[in-house]
Image (cartoon, rainbow, N blue to C red; front, top):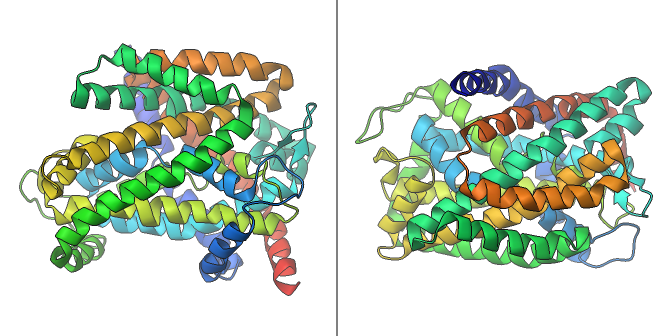
Length: 444
């Protein structure tokens, strides 16, 4: 087992190494330039569009708003709390700057993914709209590329059990045990019951729950973070300057913080940024393909807001709390660092913001990724696999809550990174389609 863990650790470092991070960021830069900064110029209009399309009667399964909330339910998770803290602990405050960069250019990536997902989606045997990278690879690039679609679907169906299921359940169980002394197995059982009540109802029920739970929890978490920020408002300018200046210069050792190079800031900032907003991994377009819309471009505009909200808003809130409270130099990392920061900012109960944030965000991630994995499995085996996949998914939750997941985490991390390769290649090859559709939309 130790040898397997060592092998997976090396493989994970390779998959998420400089080449992959440059590829992810590079595709985002390429699409942003090719779209003539369209995602940045139309962010405001995208929010207006999101509000205006909450309800419509166009073809699809769920409203554009519900599609965004479903994708955010899978995206907003431990990465927004523990992931940001880990990036700062390993790369220094400058890592936050590089998280921002992944988000700014990731908006174009997420936009292109959703445009192609709607453009090349299909209707399955049960009349549901299905789509995502496996479909735009198959239908957009042709039969010669079909094996890429199969590879993506296989990796997605398997990786979902780690990154979107057992790891999330484990995070919830550990957080609840640490704060309320509730045994992990009990948390696993409760989490399974709540998940079953939603997942067995299919996409429509997931979308309804996500559209209620995600905005409520996101607003609650942001309000809690803003309270800490306003209490320490005089420290915000220095915190922002520290983020920017540390992005391009080495961060000296301070307190329990051992120091970080510029490369560490870039590496951990980009890696944690991508882990948080998932731009380029190909997961979110699976949800956006089911949206009630006749316009790929409009759904792309809605989709790019997910990256904006996830990283530029929620991750930034976490980062500012960690930096202005001085917790970043404590030597702590992960969720423990975020908890220390909130407890420092709001003595007595600040840590509960982190706990409840982790619980709800991880729960919604389990819901969102269950749909992603299910659609990947359906692409491979047809609609007959849907119910067995759902049952297997629910069985994995309590296992994840009580198990030691070092190997599972590493395997999921590797497969999650490998998912990005066929997706990014498809985005580059199909970019002329994205550019053409966008130009046509703007002219009309």
